[in-house]
Amino acid sequence: MTDDSRLSGALHKVYYLLDAVTEELLYIGRSPTPLERLYRFRAKYKREVILGPCQRFVFFEQAQTAEREAIRRHQPPYNKKIMSATGMFGKKQTAETREKIRQSLLGGKRSAETRARVSLARKGRPTNTGKKWSPEVRARMAVAAKLREERKRNERK
Image (tube, rainbow, N blue to C red; front, side, top):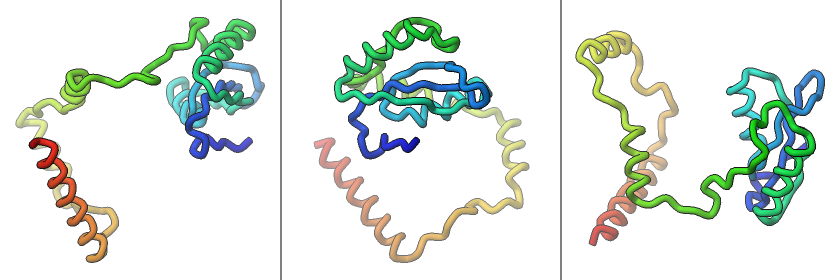
């Protein structure tokens, strides 16, 4: 089964997750990107699952209704409730909410002891083990950074 979610991101999909061995239905969900949900399910439950059939809908409300009906009909073990959360679909977070989230994700201060242990562990290791940028790419990145700074300055005015 091929997944074209990158090409048709506007479509809402109701997907079925099946046990990889027995093909027993485990979960029914709704997402524009069922493959991402498959990977998250595997990581969360440490269980090998496969993506079953996907139903595609143009309208969010249709997908939500279909998901609820499928859960009610099949009662998969990993669906706790017969509901379909709207999530943040069609909504925007306020600047205040975004700032609260940003603050919660910022790291806390490390103790002097912790900083010393991290420093000791990193001694002798190269700081940049990634790709070395060519001079042309570095020049393009510098131009992009200057444009970003200019845009920020203009937004503040």
